[in-house]
Image 1: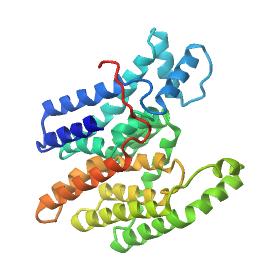
Image 2: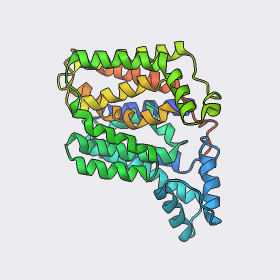
Image 3: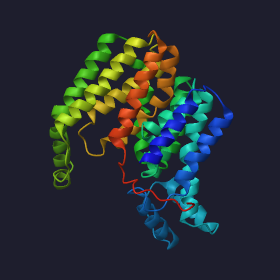
Image 4: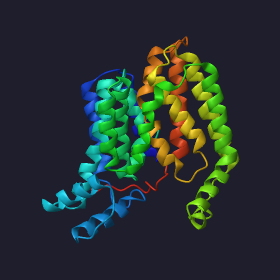
Amino acid sequence: MTSFLLLSFLLLLFSFKRSSNLLLIISFIILFILSAFRGITVGTDTVNYYMLFGRTEQGVDIRTEKLWEVLSQLIIYFNGDFSVLIFISTLLVLIPVFVVAKRFSVSPLMTVFLYYTLYFYFFSLNITRQMIAVSLVLLACMFLIENRKRVFVIFIILASGFHLTALSALLLLLLNRIPDKDYVYYTFTGIAMFVGLFLSSYIFSLGGQIFGYLRYVEGFELGSIFGNFLYLMILNSFFFFIMSGIGERGTFFKLFFIFIIASNLLIRIPFGDRVVLYYAMIQIVYLPYFIYKTKINPRSLAFLLVLLYSYIMFFRRFGAGEILPYSNTLF
């Protein structure tokens, strides 16, 4: 853990320089090497990808999303092995993130730092296939902010070729129907928190009963309600701080708001965080924008609170997905 923590400090140091192509390239190389050459024991799903790749080599239908299947088949056709799949999939995860950082962020290196400390990078060491989809959804959201809805839809459909759950992001097309009123943000956040904490287990069980999966649903642990409550208090307080400190509350802000609502609603749903990921990634672009545009004086206070929030999320999640013990084929 110490090495990963030190790397976060290095990326934080980089972030003090708002824009530097050289530091952006160095950041990319570091993150690429750690992911592309990781051992197959890093992450719970990496070994599953290895097994699926082996079945594809044997001509067995792996019954997964088409673009992942096509990618595996192309690698096999050109006599590549599983290491090539991890190599290419790492590029597919990181390139959209760094394109967004370079083209759309007010502070590209701060975006990279947040991508790392908010744990999205570490998720990619485990659920790589979904994180390709999440990265593409992030890129799609940038086009939605620019009101280029057709391009947004194209990227969402492309993302669904790697993980079908990406289609849930199409709901963002309705984003601008949310009234920009304080009472709307407060009310919806409060309702979502109440439903997520106190009604989600009932709704989840009812859904399992209706669709015939009750025996599976009963096997899931929903976690500590006190721990969930504490997490949501931190998250919602941070959101209200952001809301009070920003003047412009257009599409960009509303994307961040949807992340808050999804987090509240799905807090106690098993694998709900997998869905939240599609909305959560907007933070890595929005939070640097907030620091740059904030009305809070001094601005350094906004920076420090964002920094505190990012490290709370880092330590809260660290180790999730069984990324430890970490191993790398290069060293």
